Image (cartoon, helix red, strand yellow):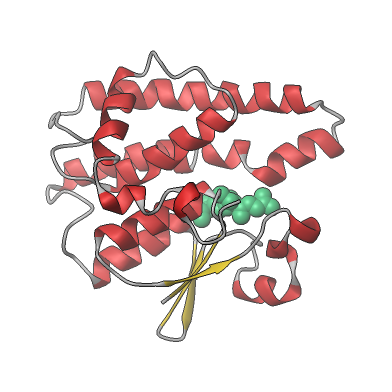
Length: 214
Ligand SMILES: N[C@@H](CCC(=O)N[C@@H](CS)C(=O)NCC(=O)O)C(=O)O
């Protein structure tokens, strides 16, 4: 398997964690999101992912995109260890936790959105960071409550084994720190993050541990 990835990309980070949790080997193919205006916009990469975003996973001659679709594909092909609980309502909750980040927070603090705020809408770097912190804070506050009231409170976002929710949470917290978000109020999120970072699967997926890390 080949993973088109960028060390600092939190969507790529999600897939790296999932592959590691499943114990699957893969080749990292770095796509630098800033160099030369962004390698994600190159014609060669655009053929792989018309959305011009990382990650993309190449497996058995197919190219898959969208981190959560990729992770669900990995889950279906390699069910152990499971990244979703068994009970349908529990699965829906874990997916809701993941989507709270992947749909509501991450897309509006993504590189191309911030670039648009700065270049087209003439906002300063600081204004763009204020924007990012605003949406991050709304999403993380909601997730904090979801974890607090989860029916199966445990070591991780849901229960005592890592799930899709944790796979989305840990990279989002790394993003939040890059934007200077204040995180101390999110006691559950920080507790869960600390538990995740005890696991090699999460540590080995971290931006600073990637071959393309700067
Ligand atoms: N929803 C997509 C988001 C992918 C995404 O936004 N990737 C970012 C990096 S985390 C990217 O490639 N950004 C490039 C850009 O904004 O030009 C997923 O989960 O895969």
